[in-house]
Image (cartoon, rainbow, N blue to C red; front, side, top):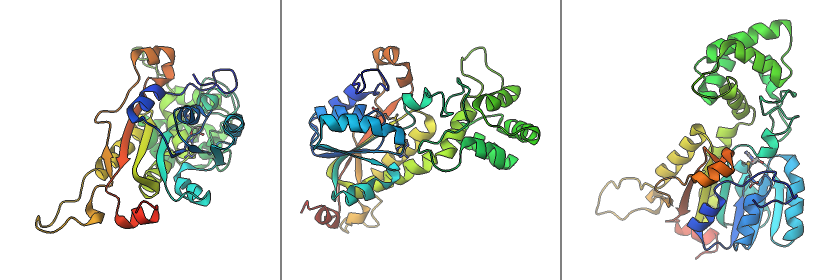
Amino acid sequence: MISLSGNQDHIPVLISQILETIKPIGGVWIDGTFGAGGYAKAFLESGADFVIGIDRDPDTNVYANALKSLYPSKLVFVNENFSNLKNVANKLGFGGVNGIVLDLGISSMQIDSTKRGFSFRYDSPLDMRMSKTGKTAAEVVNQLSESELSDIFFKFGEEKKSKAVAREIVKARKSQQIVSTFDLVNIISRVVKGNRLSNIHPATRCFQALRLYVNGELDEIEKALLATKRILFHGGLLVVVSFHSLEDRIVKNFMRNSSQSKPQPNRYLPIFESERAPFKIITKKPIVPSDYEQSRNPRSRSAKCRIAVRIECEDSHKKKMGQL
Ligand SMILES: C[S@@+](CC[C@H](N)C(=O)[O-])C[C@H]1O[C@@H](n2cnc3c(N)ncnc32)[C@H](O)[C@@H]1O
């Protein structure tokens, strides 16, 4: 592991396989999910000329400062949402970039924190906000209606008992506000029972759902993916690592749809630039962790990496990017 602080804060997932697939690495990269800086450091060590690090969590600044001290002229870090990656790069003076990497979800520092409410394993304030701004998970469960809560658990957690959980929350909060992770775990556990065959905690799906909702995670991914098309140079790479099916579905569909040309109305007509597919998929099948990586880092278990390359850029795009 690439450790900046001397301890294993967050083990970067799939990094060797990613670097092997996309080498040689060079030019300007955006790391939209900086975390502990493991990916950014690996990209810089592997030949990236410059990395724009982005993370919405202010707690990651300490890791950014540590990496900046190693690469003072090759790294800039911005506390932002990655959906703004194009604006961030433009504001820094970059009209285009050679690669973008998104390692989705939350870091080990976040899930292992005993204060931030991401984990049902620790009793802590029910917060879950990556950016430490906006509505907390506690405000969500205390303020939203029963049907809104049920929709969240169903849509973002695929929780079969979403309605019953929402009903139990509304009943419980009438006598006492829900303030801690364990308050919520107790309520969920009254409705969702553990399964002897799987060791999935009964609160897993509802906690995932609340986290995705509180942080608008799926919207963020959709917006960021759309922005990649407008900021990647011709030949630029898009690397996305996802950890659950809801994330991966968005990435897979985006890459699939963006790698298919729109059908030509008439085969004798020239293909208009705007109808050409903007990406070509490099990973026919997603890259997944080896048995060795999974045993070394069980958190890598569900990771899937998809990679695509920006192609068929319109001449206007190339001109804007200085590639013509
Ligand atoms: C899995 S960790 C990345 C770990 C990193 N690759 C490393 O090697 O240390 C995901 C990080 O992305 C950040 N993040 C998640 N969604 C984000 C968003 N929409 N905008 C900016 N940062 C986001 C989280 O705060 C977290 O630090």
